[in-house]
Length: 196
Image (tube, rainbow, N blue to C red; front, side):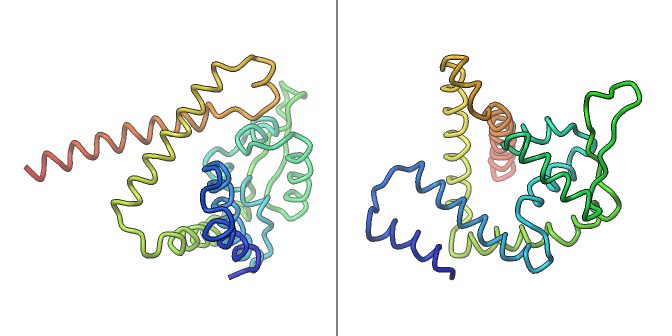
């Protein structure tokens, strides 16, 4: 266990066990990122590249702006990452002959091949994180977290346009959460029918 992760555990179990839920979720995400970052580093892949690769494996050919929005980072960060990833041979950036304004990002064969190497590392990280947690507890955790995302997305819509323009949108997360919840609901209904 890294020193940072030990500090997080000390904070939550001893120092401030009733700190705000947002901080607990942030610290859980940090622990996930650290665990995956260590695994990726063994293959020479920075964590920041993982984020973009994961998006491109699902939707190749996005603009740099679309990548920024999906990754939840500023465009200069995406631009720097794309330059580095292009130098490593993971991506190619191209303009369409009909649209010289936008730069489209495409995976190379090498970038696509990384999926077989890196996805198992993320799966391993997830498996490590759920050791000793029951299936029912995991379903409840997913349902609760998705409901929180949905609530925060609704709240975002109620905020002033100026405030929401300065922060990354949670709307894509809310759509994904609602789609997942409807899938879980349909699966639960199907399970209850087959059990009857």
